[in-house]
Length: 253
Ligand SMILES: [Zn+2]
Image 1 (cartoon, helix red, strand yellow):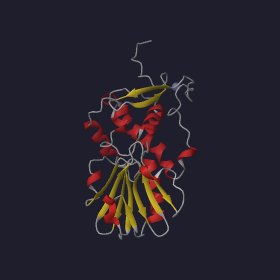
Image 2: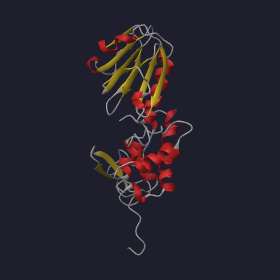
Image 3: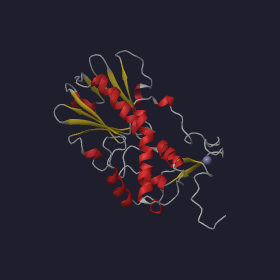
Image 4: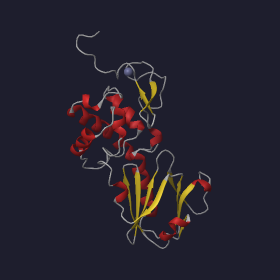
């Protein structure tokens, strides 16, 4: 699933190739109104991508688990079949194609699709106070689910949820109320610290401590990493059962 950092890199790549250019053709028919309009801005916001066009119209896409934007030269072979394309924007020298995005819509108010989101984990300055305030109002029953709550903080996906919890030795199933504000702040700053370097480095070069490493040794203690579905969306949480235990109550063991 694309996380905020992937969307940022996608936006940067699109900006470089299509910003300021005029759309010659737009498909499917629902996007035909973009023909003849110039691309004014491309903005990542959490896991949403907003492409603003002249005339006050914007194309809102959300990648969820499956979507991705690609840019091709005219005639270049696409990396996915055409039937999977949910948007095809043709310019003089490039074609921007979005494959399999579950949300692709034209909007008049570019702020509306992202109005519900919490502060973006990747922006500068990062509004951590607002994140903590939203976190304390959230009904997410566990830390793992809280980190994925885009209304609290936008842009964290499953990978950095797992990695940040592991980095701080926190149990993903701990109720957020059990964590004090200082540690909760540290948790969001850790996720941000892990994600920010990815704005410049390709994702392929990344190595994760726990995510995608089920059964392999924890880099800290050597215990095999476990995988367990979490929350009503059953997102897979990778964790070390030894160093991410709840802190033992004094007097136990
Ligand atoms: Zn461990």
